Image (cartoon, rainbow, N blue to C red):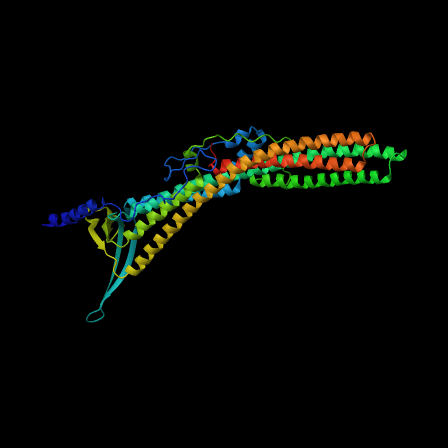
Length: 469
């Protein structure tokens, strides 16, 4: 009879264990749908409405520029940047929280050690009786809540999605840091190119000033032309000094992005601006689907959806198995006797009654959080379309501007050369030479600006496409 009474709790627990295989309550995750264009204005990009499963492989896109200094700066930034280190720590935090959620699949087992000494007084006729007692025990408690409604599996699903979102956020930050380093570097190169232009301009103006000084000394020209030449030299020197300041600011910005102190930082001067990498005529849809910010937003939607399932499961009864065993005796030595073994086994059902309004509020909050995450996902996709459109069309427009500016630069150089010859022949005044030289300088700087902008836009395009071609 006693044995049958011991078996009944086991049988009831087996029934509960069978129930634990039920399907999780709550909605299953679906990526928010959007009415997307089949291609960009430039053509070639086909959209798909679901998120990719495999993680993208890291791509060293900066090597497309074939610049050793740029590659060194970006690779150092990816190792030393403090924002990235913080994001790496947050990823580790999300990973550990995912482990915490998975631990709920396993029973909770605790081992203890208790030593007690107490005095009891029994009152009766006379003075009563005082009894001293000692109790030593080594309990082992076991508790397991069956995941009947999928609450634990939804918690694990949410934690796993949050972990993946943290990983994609890290990838997005890496792409952003690398892109910022590249764009800052090309801005520095543009400053170096303009400094070189001003250096050559200063040489020309100083030679002209020397020549005019000699001609003024012999009375060939008036002091007005000499004053104009002195003004042009001083103006170029002041502009050259301003570019020196711009260079310091950009070098210090690269130092901070690289996780180092700005004090004592230096970047070798390079005055050439290479053409940007060629953009492929056709960009496959998988490239855009690898944008880490879109992937992170999609994973946050999945985490919010799983939280709706967790909140839904809270409405249902919870089933748990409770067991306890251990050793108990009046003295430490008695713990090793066979009679010291004690145990208990049972199951319990907990049904929420008075907390229904609270649970409804929690589920409504979870649904609202899911709606917000879905809206954020759609906004991220819309922003990605805008960024790619801007970069693609901006790249095409800048290429046309480059062609026109090259013609303007060639004409300005020719005009300057002709004005110098005509001035030497006495056909025009020095003011005409000054105007032609200013036009040539402006044309050269405008050409450098367009070249630098094309490089910056190419970086923007790479970022918009998720760092892959």
